[in-house]
Each structure stands twice: as structure tokens, then as C-alpha cells.
Amino acid sequence: MGLTIQATALRQVFNRRTIFSQISFTVGERSALLIAGRNGSGKSTLVKILCGVLTPTAGTVTIDGDGARDQFARKARIGLVAPYLQVYEEFSALENLHLSMTLRGYRSDETANRAMLDRVALDPKRQDPVRGFSSGMKQRLKYAMALVHRPAVLVLDEPMSNLDAEGAAIVRSVMDDQRREGILIVATNDRTDIERWDTEVNLNDQR
Amino acid sequence: MTSAERYSTRWVRATVAVFLKDWHSELRTRYAISALGMFVITTIAMILFSLGSEPASPEVLAGMLWVVLFFAAMSGLSRTFVMEEERGTAMTVQLQAPPSAVYFGKLLFNLVLGAGLTLLTVVLYALLIEGFVIRSTGLFVGIIALGSIGLASASTIIAAIIARANTKGTLYPVLSFPILLPLLMTVISGTRMASEGASWGDAVGEFQILISYIVVVTTTSYLLFEYIWKD
Image (tube, rainbow over all chains, first blue to last red; front, side, top):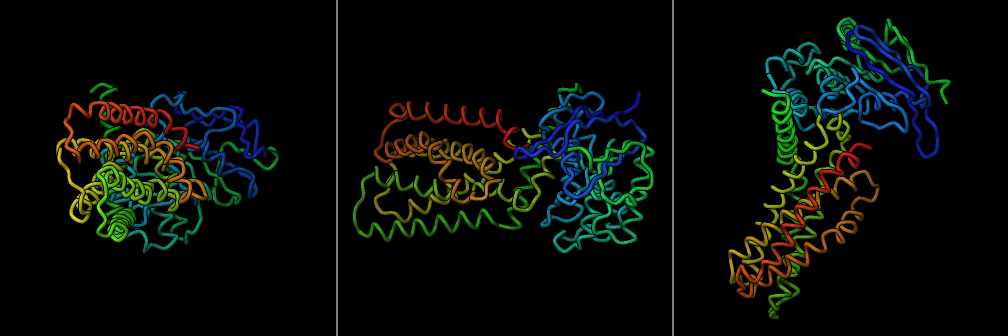
């Protein structure tokens, strides 16, 4: 059996307000999950729970039944791109990628890091401090940081934010590759962001 | 290599990465170094003006040294967590590094910063404050070193707690004071003893308290950090 991510009876409450409840789904390898819903429906909250940076009020998320025993296990499997995820602006693009690898406990390889920056068309700017980057370039760097450790699960929250036509084409290529090789999870209120998906979680009617 | 060895290697690599990230970031931005340096210089200048030519007892001078160190630590040692929240990079670190590596990486950074702060303060204090004489140098170095480690340990976990609060500037010293009180009372007593020429044997109790304090604070912080950091 291949890789699976399983969410069971997820419920999230903030300040006595129920954001969503009874969210359950299973996503298998080589497939895509669409998390749809209007603004404020809890898409980003669900994304944070799936990535393990937020503990749900109730319910569980397991990736291949990991049970989160090894602190590195989930971090190695997940790559996240989201508007609320920031990069270190005082560092260069290459340094941010190096950091992304070493924080996960991996050895950083400059050749692989440069290849990743090349994939998102940032290699010529690899030594420049990120504070001088446009918002679109920062979004591309977030893709490089999410992909550099070759995650089995790629989670994208509003994947096309701040991207021009060239950036959008790169992201579509990334999404196609991920759907072929692992698990792709996309949270968006614009269904044109993703061309094909296998499972859908619609948060509009969840409260 | 066994899975336990692999895990240890990755953990050490992640911990060092957190420390180096904060270190390089500090060297480029100089937020904490500037705040600490300016605080120490202005406070010692204020003490100089206040004392004038009046002689002060060893107990008063030992107490004032730790007043400077306490408030300087309050102005600089919280930056490591507060900066992550202010820049919005806390989630980036959460996503990539395990909580224990983040805690020990940040603790290591605060230990280094705290050691620099202590060194600068003690040198300036000894040079500028008339009447501050150390008769037991070894005892003084031991008390100052353990006090600095205790200060950094407690400051690190309190910084993690207050980093998300709106009133972090006010909350930090208020929350720190009761937690640091046993440490401060012990180091003030130890510093006074060193300036009066006491022997190592006289200060055994102080050392026992300081070592116990460091072990208890660091262990508790390690156990609680994941809950503080994650949600």
C-alpha cells in the first residue's frame, strides 16, 4: 500500500466559535485533494492542522499511521506554501534554502539547492538578500523551500498568490509533478487554480 | 548507523541550524546586541551619576550589578522569540524543526548573548564603579557564570511564553521577576561574598541552589516547550 494521509473527525473551535467539525477524508498516493470554501470557512486552519503546526480541538491526522512518534517524520514528509508563511528577509535565497534543509536535520547540498532555485527561475538572484525581492519572487522562493527536501505531501494554500504568468506556469508544472509522484493538497477559493483533483473537501457547509 | 544515531545526528544538525540562523541574523540586524549594549552603558552611567563620591557597601554594589544584568537581559534576551513572531517566521520554523531543537538552539543563542552581556557589564562595572572590589576572583567567576546561565535559561522560556502577547514589553519583566527571584537572591549573596573575600567552602549553599535552579528550569522548559511553541 502506498502513502496515505488520513484525517478523522477533525473539529476546530476558536473562542467558542466552531470553524468546522466532522471533517474526515483519506488521500492516497498519486492523487490530489482540493480544500474549497469561501473566505473565513477555515481552509487555512485545516491546512495548518494537516501540516502539524496547529493541534485540532478534536480528531486526528495521520500520514501512513505515523502517530507523530518521530519529531522529524512529519516535517520530512510535508512541504507547505502559504501566504502566512514567511521567509528570512535578511538572508539570501540560497541561505533560506540551506536553512530549510538544516532545520529539518538534513545535510544541505548547494548544487541541489541551486537546481531548485533554477526550477523556480530564481538562480540568478540566489545571492541577493530576500528583502529586495518582489512579492512574486518571495512566493517562488517559498515553493523552492517547500520542495527542496522532496516532500511526499505538498500542501498549497492559495497557490497562485502574487504570481505572474511565468510563475503560474511553474506552479502548474510543480502541481502536475506532485500529483504524479506523491500527494498534492490545494486549499483555494478559486477552482481555476487547480486543473484536476481526486477528492474534495468543501468547508462551506461544515458549521 | 542505527535509527537512534540517525535521529541524534539530525537533532544536533537542526539545533545548530537554529542557533546559527539566530546568530547570523543578529550579526546582520544587530537588534539584541544594540539594545543590550546601550542599556548596559546608560545604566552604569546612571549609577555613576547617582553614587557620585558616596561610598557604597559591597552588598549594595553586588545588588546593583545584578539589577543592571537583570534589566539588560529583559531588554535583549526576549528578541530571539519576539523577532520570529514579529517577522511572521515562527510558523516557518515550526514547520521545519522539531520543538526540542528550537528550544535548545534558542537557549544556546541566549547563553552566548548572555555571556557577552555579562562580560561587558562586569568589565565596565569593575572599571567604572569605585569601591567594587572582588577579593575572591574564582568564586566571583563561578557565581557570575552560573548566574548568567540561569538568567539565560529562565529568560528563554519566558520569552517563548510572552512572544505572542500584545503587551510583551511590559509582560516580560513582570513575568520574569518572580521566576528569577530565587536566582537573583542567590547570585547577589554570592557576589557579595566574593567581594568580601569568602572561600569556596563558604559559598557551597549558593552553588547548590544555582545548579539546582538551572537543572529544574531547563528540564521544565524542555518538557513544556512543545505546548508553548505549537499553539
